Length: 187
Ligand code: CTP
Ligand code: MG
Image 1 (cartoon, rainbow, N blue to C red):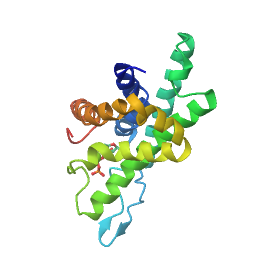
Image 2 (image 1 turned 90 degrees about the vertical axis):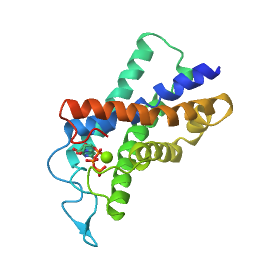
Image 3 (image 1 turned 180 degrees about the vertical axis):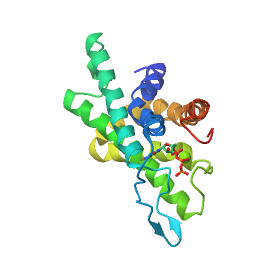
């Protein structure tokens, strides 16, 4: 795999983990996941984490991944460089999407413990909580896929590109979300 391929693949294959965040902002409203419960006078997760956002986000990430598989199939692009077998592909997509939203919940949980209010910035955490969640869940079920796609040999470039571009994409998407009214803050 060339360095360029590794970089592009690293980004494209991560799409199922990138989509859930924006989708959650579109779907999110209604009952909060923590049912308004607090711990030591601070909300468990806060009003920014809702059941609709969680399932809408995960569902959208999975649909995005399945669309990618369809495109790959229709254009007969070599399956080998994508996620692997069909069942592994679906599994990885589900892990990326679900892990992304769980990481986002983890980020909010930490923010509330630190006394950061819903929607207030937490630099680093806001941009990388979902990346960490996506990788953690996927490495749990598909360690060899994560290693061969983001760690071993040239593929490490994919991880580096991801870590550089994700905050930029995150910022851009959130600014758009803010403009169209899906998000309360532009970050
Ligand atoms: N959202 C949701 N449910 C989720 C995740 C997100 O409803 N599980 C929606 C909420 O409307 C949220 C928006 O998506 O306001 C943007 O998500 P995010 O930036 O993660 O939430 P914040 O409002 O910034 O809250 P926090 O401080 O907890 O990150
Ligand atoms: Mg946030």
